[in-house]
Length: 84
Length: 84
Image (cartoon, rainbow over all chains, first blue to last red; front, side, top):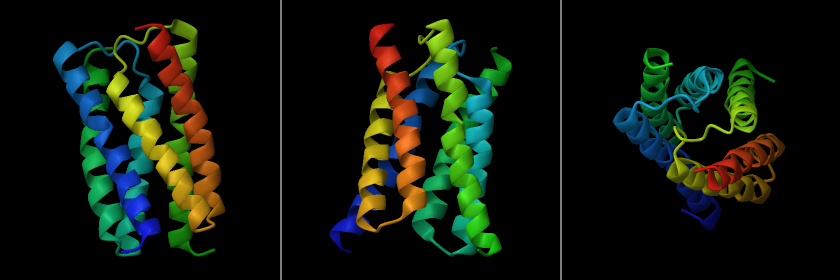
């Protein structure tokens, strides 16, 4: 793996990992007032698209990263729908 | 452009567009209590990584999508730092 690939994988890791503290914060506080419903709706839909794209081009990093992101983003979306 | 590429571009469009309503909501309400600081810190850092990756592999869709996402995510991050 070259340096460019490493940067790509590390970036995917960070943008996926980022949703862990958000999902944890939303779950713990149930404070979703500042979280935008259209954001999580559009974002979750986009991540489903990335997942389909990853499956079509058979890219495991895209499949794995977006599966985890989808679970976390959907958790925030469900909490938002419940506590708005 | 084949169907797979179209799905990729549409997904990139959605996951970038998603941050527009969040940035707008945060700017308008100044309600950032439910927004996670670690999320936007990690996410912005990850998007910087994606931008570097896009520049290294000379991919304009990655460069354009992540430049816009970075601006919007940094706007939310700055508002969070100011109004926490």
